[in-house]
Length: 228
Ligand code: ATP
Image (tube, rainbow, N blue to C red):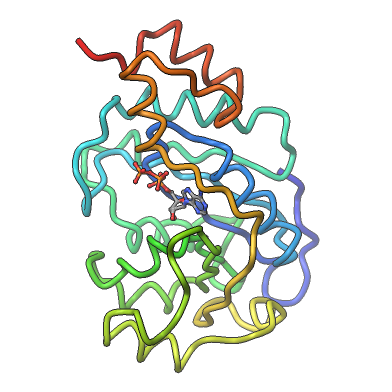
């Protein structure tokens, strides 16, 4: 990843992108790439979940999902991979992960961290472990996702209140403090989901052009997502 210039607040904002990535697809890649440009991020750290705490067990193991993300982001100097959640025996929770990053030299206590979420994941935040602490550790940037409007009137009440209080219209807010603001950004609308890809693959369908060729090749080689 490009080393951000060390400036005010410990450097340019760094994006943090977690997910099950089961498998990683072009929706994820465009989200991270467009977040860099729209939000002036120094880069994005990808953090695949090991055993995600707030959803069902992924269909392929953590090591395979990590390998697929590694293949997908290879060659992109703005992207880096963090395998800590995959390597941990504990369930993956975002708050302890952000607290760990705050203890690292690259992030420190002052650098703005920006948790990247699709609009569906954002609406589900109240189900996350200690979700109200998230904004003490990072900002949140919500990416538009087809089928999931970003609208306080449709959010769970506790989240709607936080959204109204913390929402900022300008991404410049991200550079003004280490944490605490919510912004949104319009990415190229890609109605792609890992669920759709798993279904296609289990029916021997083609997932070509929905995810990188290198990932498709890995899936084929490792016989992943096949119906037994
Ligand atoms: P699944 O279908 O298994 O639920 P997914 O495609 O939503 O998976 P995740 O790994 O759960 O992928 O998503 C990681 C993050 O990427 C989440 O914040 C999610 O909202 C976001 N995301 C995934 N796909 C898209 C997309 N097509 N457009 C915008 N955001 C997306």
